[in-house]
Image (cartoon, rainbow, N blue to C red):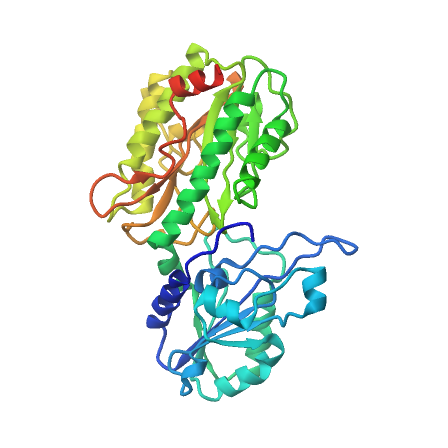
Length: 430
């Protein structure tokens, strides 16, 4: 892995927190992701399942974590099953974790090779009353490919039909949404790398540059700072492309007079950052572009102050909508009559600001969190208002990542990334 070693105390603490929520005399099982094929002998780069990583730090394929807090044998209360490494694998793929490394990096003393999993599990299931299985219950999940976890669950239910089945997700949704300080430090590193990439782009952009050239500059800067690259598929949309919310082609020329919307950010150690900035191709905003930009910035600043313990996500969005409505009236994009006649299910402001304002962020860019429950300290949310005016070929979005505090306003993890009109124009002038 490119990133520096993470302290094992994080994973030890995470496992204890999960175990404390488990039903008595039950065990929990977590699988690594598959390596997904493309065609012929090609595969996608391996990306670890975030849940097993959260609980163990293991970042390789064909790994299984078993937690059994009430196991009669103390050695079986935490077990990590790993793909057995050998000289051949080390030459062709690189060395895998050894049992010693598992203890050092995950804090797990009992490590077996994967070929021992079935017989070990059979023995454990004779001692357990129930098992926690791990399904993807994220509110945005759209799963078409059968995962390794899904295959395991199907086979497990056939083999052990009489045991009680529990869901790990309600526990993980709550635990993962509140960040440990070690996690916050890793996320801050991802934000700092993003900052370096954005500053590089500010000095690079000029009329005639291609969107994909900007993507290349960012990728270079991210990789040279120990990131695997982008935390999500980058959006680099100039002119009208900025009004296409999930524009990812990044293949058009950036023309003088246009604004580029950059929804780009680095990952670090599997933790995400999520930034959006909007910059003028020429290095100077027009008066109209500046007015729209500053309106979005005011909405973001006001919205961030609403991120306090006790806030409900749905109510937060209603308040942000009211703030945005005033700004759109000020820009002449809607009027009071539009507001008076609006459909409450699709308010007038949605014509120019049609997406949400905030989501959890962490190991996943759209991270775990139960949106119907009050916000808590150490949750991290994006704040990302935008105004999109297709008829003017203008789309502006500004996005930062905020840590909710026990008291007072949240901390902006991207506070060092330029975002005012003046700072952007000054740095682009260099």
